[in-house]
Length: 305
Image (cartoon, rainbow, N blue to C red; front, side):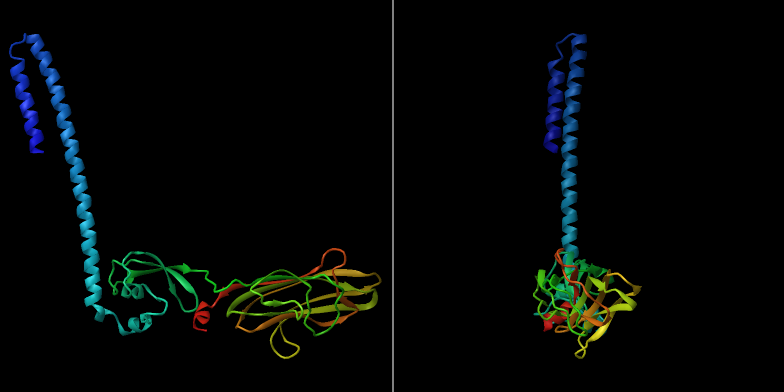
């Protein structure tokens, strides 16, 4: 900066000496031109100085941030006794296990703030860790939400396209699996076996057929879970017709959300019927569809199992 000012001053002195022998009018014109040149040079020097100051300010901010990080690290290392016993028991995790908090992440050497996945009570959770903060600071960890993490995909869609079915209290078998990812659905037995602990959703849509009858015809369909040979009916549907002298059909739908343990079995069966049966596929490729999928896995059980 000093050199630039000296150069400008030298140019000014030289210009004054150079115009001493000129006429008054030309001297004025030369002075104006010299002034404009000097003003431009001064503006350039000022801009250069501003850029230098801005760069120095950014450098200072970076240094302050690094100092703050080092101070937070020292506080965490020296101030472990500031954490309550309850917090310590909650956050304590073996080094080989999944981290359960931002404190665990700090203890394992993480220093960059950002979004992290930690192990919650049953599912994986997303949190924001401000790792510049000390472990005693309540803003160290900010909960974001649940992460949809599954150890394996489980979903199926089974179709019964064969002949009619009218056996009572027997699992209904199926013929075709359009999808059976995870292999949990057994078509021949009609039973779904849960491979993981978690919440599952099931839905069945079918067609009930009723023969002409002067009395009442009915069909009761149930979604069963484990239990004895008849199963525990968790949901059921009923279709019926009365005093009908013509062949009739009705649609039937069942759906349920269940919490299942690994090895639990779910199936469909007819509870009772009178003058009716479950319609077959006919020429329409099947009218009875059974679908299900894993909504949410208790991932903690899968990791410890």
